[in-house]
Image (cartoon, rainbow, N blue to C red; front, top):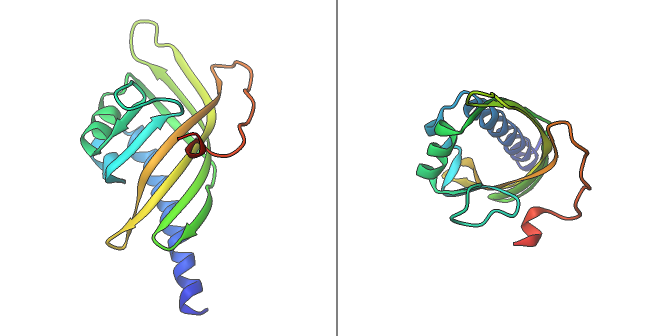
Length: 156
């Protein structure tokens, strides 16, 4: 195998490992470890959320706080990502199901299905999440919404 092909395989495997760590660290509420998977200025947001709104978290401190203090517990079930790698940048679509429970007296269940659109950056030889957007297609047993064309980034 030539060096370029080997590097491409290594990049793909590193991004798969990053996605595995994303789910594990969030689900275990390890905010610092979860935030460290992002670039320093990394963003996690719900589709349509804008800066300053709930559902939009920018920078590692805000990301760590969101993970550690989320008002729910749960389990991410992620599908293998559809990756496009171009040098030190990459993008992905990652389908997901999230099963969880909100905190509080009623302990409302969460059952969300959808996908993430993700931008990655390789910094100092390591892959990080630069921007991650959640698109929800189904909540709590409701109907499945239409599958949008393009990516969440097309709307920004």
